[in-house]
Length: 155
View 1 (cartoon, rainbow, N blue to C red):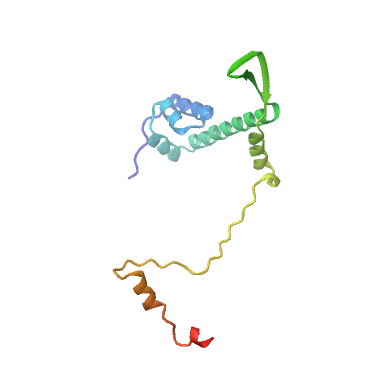
View 2: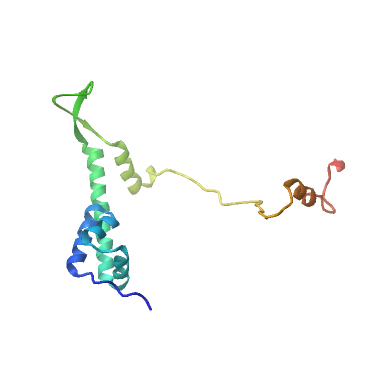
């Protein structure tokens, strides 16, 4: 018999979903709503509407982060100017984040993505055997040529 969801009323769900959308952090959202992660899991499994609302909150958080990354990459952020550890009057400099903008481009345009290939063709293998014999004893016993194998004397 599966455990029953703990009482998690509409207000608790609202608090949880608001914090999840704001922070994207599951633990923070649970703490904000004063519920356990297990309670959320059980409600997610039992309540399709709640599960969909949770997915939406996560997507909205990611969308907000993406908008901020674009803003910082394209529009930049004003920062105060310091010289020798001291602030220079009210001067400001605008800094841009190439890294954030590139991350957004990689998401949307395959031409910007890193290209990596993985060769899954393997040959040979590794045999691991627990034994009291030494490596030299194993080599001596199992590396002997089989009938029909070429030997150094055949060259």
